[in-house]
Image 1 (tube, rainbow, N blue to C red):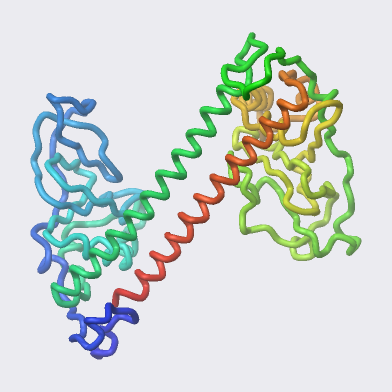
Image 2: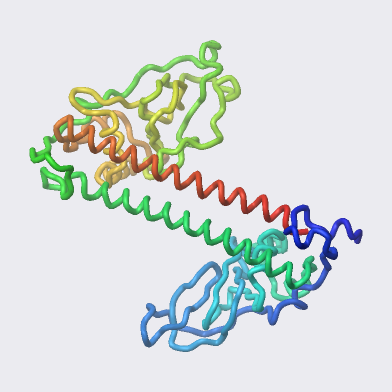
Length: 387
């Protein structure tokens, strides 16, 4: 193999004129590679059961004894997760559907194998399979020990930042879920558990058909009038987040032949098919919506952002799923929506609640973008810092 092919595109300054990387077998630079064989009974973690039981994707329980100790890279031996990696350090038991790699410098080896993508090794006409024997003979390329340390430390720091933003994102989502439970009245109640200061009046029960307009404004997408507008359907909306995905096409590129709903910026797009998937979004611009959607607008004393928050409550979710559970494709129809009753506070409190949840959504989006940017940076570095 040519030496030029054994030099990464990006190196730390002190190694730019260093030797080319060498090709070696994975077994030559690890302590052991094998498949777990531990017998166990799963327990909750306690003083009597302190040792992790390592399954194919993560810790699955705890035991009073351990069979392995050290620094490990682990992956599922068989199934959809074969080739997906995770790391564990300490004393543990390892299940028989888990392949492990044990070593002393796994901070370098982990991103190297991430870059290599062990899923390429999984084979078979049935379920994907990764064999310890195959891993032992895997040919990989490595630099000097000193450069390995530098690369490993770099990716450790990058992984720390990714994990930090993942936790911030998860914490903010959990916070939103808690607020959705506490800022709307429970069943049988007329006031919520948590309120903004200054609001004391009981909430009033309102009927959907009296407070929400469900658009009937269908247009022909073939006229050419809407060619440059986006066409958005439930498949373009991320479940339970309101995020519009990157797979949206313009009307002229969507090969549309049947009527679509014309919506405007600020309208609510709600997926009526499979309501258990939680497909809802505030339209970011004018466009056309799939006939599998409803276009919603608040009226008669209900604020639009408050209505959008209602769609995200457990009460509305339970109702939409219960009335759509029929044979064939689950779907909530207009009549079922129109008889839904929900509780509404005075307008100023609605505005506060609606703005609060829009702000939380913006905060979640900010964390999501930071996380995606870090993941993109990591992917780029993996491609450039390994051979």
